[in-house]
Length: 521
Image (cartoon, rainbow, N blue to C red; front, side):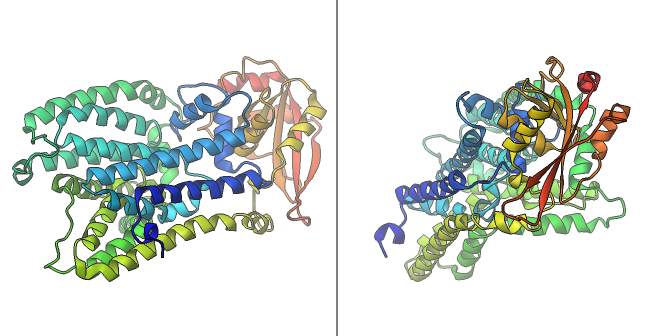
């Protein structure tokens, strides 16, 4: 076994990251798949600069895409670049937080590799979770700044700025802000930590100093988040109703069930490498071993932040009687938990000569999970064909160019204003022809682009159904109303190469301009 595998270095760890990114990037380049639902939604958002793009998703990731995409670059390339940029921001934060915890370069490398073995990083991040990954990356860096602020209070305004940026990435990052503030005060007020020796030449400042800098941090946070917060709170969909829709509130649900869902979700979030390494270190450690050398204040802050974050989330879920919970919601809320677990585990395994055999097994396990993560990319070549046989919406099989060509052939070569029956169709049509302006009637959280009313192109309704012709979706019918009465319905059969026995149907009809003009009413 080569030495760089036996004793991972930061160079070998980042080479593994590059191989991981290139493996998925190459697959995306050669794959004939169209945009997934997450990517199509981003294209829909990015038709124009706006303060907000619906109450469901904050605007930062869309602003990032609009900033990064040159006019001559395709949306597919821009979306993948943005996706992996967010992942690299997150992984850079993982290494930085490990260093802030007191980990040496060897432990930093192994912690970085362990995070490639995170279950969420093995699959979901390559076709969705873009807002979540960006928020997790920013809260990870905010955790680094908070670790510095524990000994250098002047860092608190940086924490406040990063906290605001995180909330502009994903709304649940607000739970990180609250839990981090509470946890910091718990640590600052502990006399045992106040008596510690200086860290990096900085002593522990009195609580009053921390308070003054935290107040400044609050001002920075408020100034940065205020414009979007005002926009969001004045939207008709409402914050409470949005939260209830997301967690699927059920008034008849027993109070204990949401708590169980969060606890089980937290265990799933920690899979695979962080939880396995923590269990291994706990199992082999003995009282005479040196144990972890993690910075005590940072370690305790991360422990308290994890406890507070989970506790706040459990209370919210129980009060709202949530019947739905997914582990990915925890990523921006407790981003440092996995780093804390991995640093502690590796410092224990590295701290005693008698654990050399177990240390070697842990390294093998980590590299095996990295290999599984990279190898999982190959599965994506066959998954689309399997899904095509049974998918209900078949997002990635929709022939965007053919759909756009059919609509322009029927309703004119000039730019069209298209009201679609779902979010995905609005996105892929905007991707194919940037002159067209699309809007979806499917969700109150997706407003029309800024130029939808200003433009005066033909107004068209379009929707796609699977396997057979179906009536206009309810949301579209409610918007169109009587304008569709007596209007001929155009139909086009769209074959599915991966499933010849199936077909999609594109249905469309012309609408009076008044229907498109009332989009912003």
